[in-house]
Length: 252
Image 1 (tube, rainbow, N blue to C red):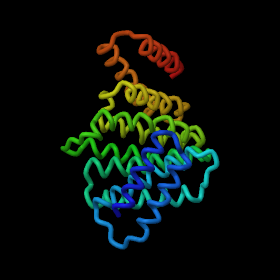
Image 2 (image 1 turned 90 degrees about the vertical axis):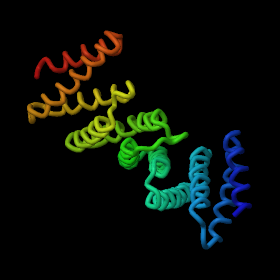
Image 3 (image 1 turned 30 degrees about the vertical axis):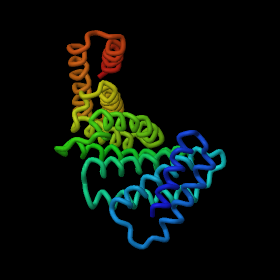
Image 4 (image 1 turned 120 degrees about the vertical axis):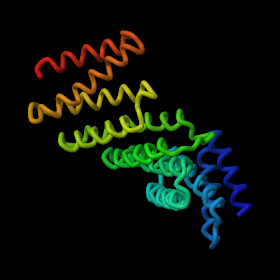
């Protein structure tokens, strides 16, 4: 196992330096060595999972990609982190699993399967939400880091919504809006902006078919914008968003 860890460290250094092909060769050796070990303790399992994740990142950076190998490694990474999550259920295990979902989402984006990519990111933000209800601090997965990770999943989810029909898109956007609301998106103005965008899309999708629901989401967005004005004043972005909202709401 020590040999595998050393090779993994070498692979990480090569990956950081952008020496992709060589790093993949070392990561492959790590997987070969680990596969020969029957009993891996929980600490070693986490180390192994980290290297598998880094290997997936490296494989996606290669000019010529072995998609079957990537898919196999994604399965291994996700399985390992699911085991760790089931064993601990703490912030680290949840965020590690969220990153595994993100890696899989990145793979689907690479092959232009935006539906599957979006599903991965929905799973990711769902498990990140859980971390905000754990009374614990983590030196790496700080509140700011978790909010950053949520922010990075917003566009892939929007891309998912764009390739679906209206009914499914509204369902997706409602789910994300509720997730952001549950964690308190006011922590981060970027996420607050996305929550406004989702609220507006849900409003526009009503087309007069569900005026009561449209009114609710329009009110949610306007209330948020008023709070933004109180906090930040009429900055350009807020002013523009408020003007757009008023224009969109005129017919309603």
